[in-house]
Image 1 (tube, rainbow, N blue to C red):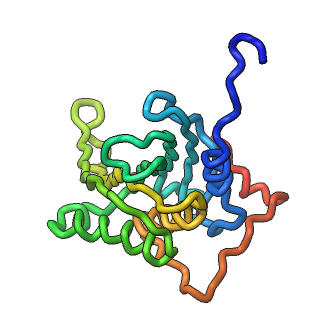
Image 2 (tube, rainbow, N blue to C red):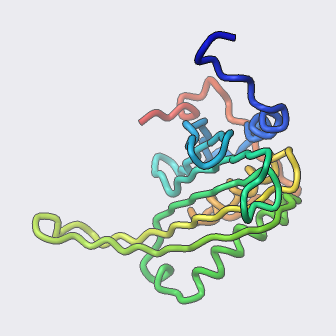
Length: 198
């Protein structure tokens, strides 16, 4: 090993990070690996996702895996998942006072439905209204929903957690979940729509 070389990551982290690469996702979802934040934990990995209907991007999100062999305060274990979801919403939906509890239940129910055991969950639901002024006065008013959450997975296999996060993103985008007995079709690599680039 030469000066500046990094030692390989711990096997537990490597297995958990690998399990985040789902082989099958709904056709509305596009996943990609992202650079992970470096200061939150000794080891980290991240993926991003976008939910599309036709060519319209309805929701975006990030899921970050943090690993600290010694754990951190409030984690209840060496792993922590940090999720972010943002979606456009109709103004009448974002004004509903029950929206926060409902969106939080989307996350917890998705984790339960995917049998993704977790502990120490916490987060926030934010509604944002954007209005234009001056030379942007004619821009339509837009409303967005943001969910920021974190939880400690009970196992190294994070595939159920990633699937639950994808389910949450679809719900935020207004796309109903698939019935339990219906599998998502794998995206064909030769399909030009499967490789959207911005």
